Amino acid sequence: MSLSKFASLKLFITGPTYIRDEVKAAAALPEFGHRDAENELRFGPIRRHLRTLAGCGDDYEPILVLGSGSSAMETSIRSLVADDEILLNVSVGAFGDHYHAIALANGKQSTNLKFEYGRPIDLVVLEHKLKELRPDVVSFTHNETSTGVTNDMKAVCALIRQYDAMPLVDGVSIFGGADIDLSHSGAAMYVTATQKSLALPAGFGIGFVSREAEDKAATLTNKGHAHDITRQLVCARKNQTLTTPNGALANQMAVQLDSIVNTEGIENRFARHITMRGMVEEWVATLDGFEMFAPKGFRSVTMSSVVCPEGVTQAQLKGTVKEALRSKGYLMDPGYSKLNAQLEKQGMRQIIRIGHMGDITPDMLAEYLVDLEVELKKL
Ligand SMILES: Cc1ncc(COP(=O)(O)O)c(C=O)c1O
Figure 1 (cartoon, protein in one colour):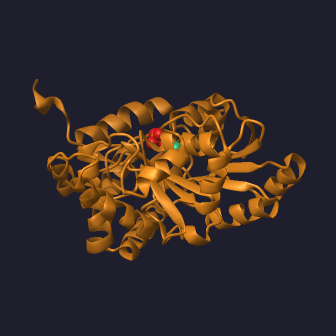
Figure 2 (tube, rainbow, N blue to C red; figure 1 turned 180 degrees about the horizontal axis):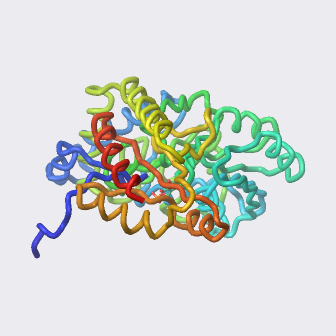
């Protein structure tokens, strides 16, 4: 088969994202046995660096679930929501709805409290719902990838705690790009994935399990095998995975996390993401007819959603603009498809997304914005 058919594009989508050559090359490091001493050389540092990135010390236990972010989300639902309990899922977009759908697919009693696309969780409305429903568990999205909105995780968890419910948080598209200060977050379990701000291929769902969550999981039945936190933790504490890991990804992850923690430094990494959000905000301010979708104070540091001028169509974004940028070596994100289709139907303006997460640098982003602007101005 001719591999030259595969285009090498710089991914400015919202995940999977751009992978550095050093990390690509790490996939070719030696295979290893996952119950052998060689495993420890990968997963010992991986789990230590995950704790550092999360800011959680020993307060949470990192687990690596084979699959992707959804696998870790499903693990949190299967292991922490009993069949006779009430789950309140709070959604500010498509990925909030995804958490709700996973709960329903697992037979849980989930109610979906939905906020308008582009808005963060409104604490007054949430409190009203908490009083009315009295849920046992509440799930929500930290960083909503369909809209570019970041919820105030600590404030939301604190409110949920006031009503004696257990908060489960989906941080798939922000972990590794922002200081989540997990130890002080109030989350019972925080889930994420490898292919977003960690700038790795997809393949592991990552879960951070609090002692409280561990204790609750021990009392639940019908958790399946791979989605059972109790079984996962037995292996995690030995720095092993419950089932055979993707060895190539483990090698890449060991190299990448070492680079994040020991070469770039986590503070520099978080600051770089804030800088890139600022670059997009400044760029948008110079463009006639464009505006940021998410409100100030709730804008994501890992990706931005930008509202296009009236008259710009989905067909233009998905066809003309995306393909023009492909010919320049980029994969452009023409927006969350379902949302844009709905907006177009209602005669409302289209929204594009710009992924600026992981290992994308300010220089790469600056170049992309120049090329993107050229194409957008042709519309
Ligand atoms: C916020 C959020 N949650 C969950 C998911 C699903 O994760 P995965 O595709 O890794 O299963 C995504 C994927 O884009 C996401 O952005």
